[in-house]
Length: 456
Image (cartoon, rainbow, N blue to C red; front, side, top):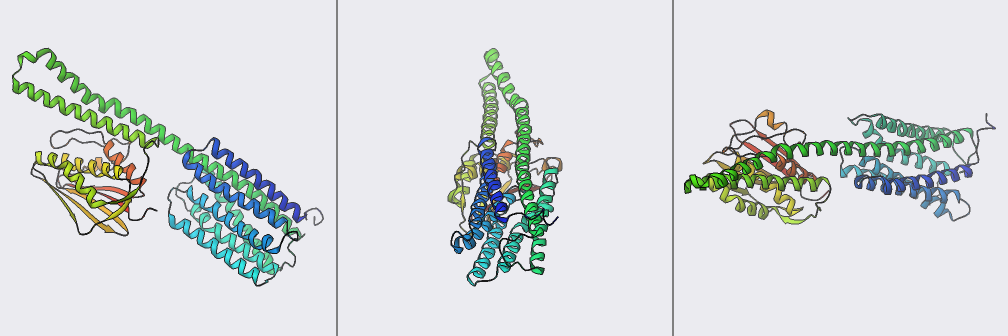
């Protein structure tokens, strides 16, 4: 057994090099050929990590042929960096993302690389350096492995991926314990344990990469299924909601064409106003449908710039003053400070305009609408509060979801498709903010959205 298992360490390093080299080709080829724009960025990060790992293995294999600073310090620093890139790509596939997690990974990597380089400059033993590398890589991979283990959405590929990286972590623990109990005196070691460890590590690296690609494909398939579902709902909205106002327009115009001589001027004026309102509803629906479809297909460019949120809200209140005056609704804006955010002005304009239009629609005559702007937890929070008809529970749970139709008539029988709120939700997501609604029937409603003061 001991005669068969030990392998030439340099041969193993060359094997690592070629394996990582072909993995790089595979990942970059997949990213350019099949991946969506979102996944392409994740694949490039993962591929860049593998590329750094490939270079690191080359430099290690050149031990005793190049200066120690290159084959030890630079090589191992590149390996730490490659682990950092790989784990950031892993974290990017999780449903819940946080910039703090990425900063945490970078922090662990910098600490591991710094400790190793200090140990190398202090001329520490080979065994000490091996232990530092093993513990450092273990520390870098541990947070994403734990987060994947506790991810709510469990699938076969996710469990498979956790199994691979859990096994990888176990191997690192075994290596650390083994080297602690059996100090390594030479870098290239021909022991049975090292051979088994290297072969296992090599196989888990290959299987883990396959698992990563399967997770990327799974995420892509889920997005495609959602887009198909949204597309079906999109056509359903067109078929149902657009037919109503267009049917009214056709009916009213037919009356004017065929019986205009039998109506008085006042009656003609009334029919014309109804026709105008019907056409306005059709136009608004088409405008929202177009904007929503452009968001889904990525045709709306996200261009954040520094804007004063107070000014933007005041501009939209001025635009909606006439609509509010028609129902004698008081429209007030309150804020104790100027709030500057980095945001796409057109998108936030659309959000504020839609929420104000909704508030006016669902508020009775002589009602009141308050707009409040505060800073809370490093976020700008905008609240639009009305004392209108409120939100029924069966409608509240369907808000901001295209697959759940959430509509109710306004105080003057105004109709809507619910697409305005969908647009608001999409635009706020683009800004890494949140949007929600509170309200009870007969007690008014409050729509709130937040924007980070600093883009994450």
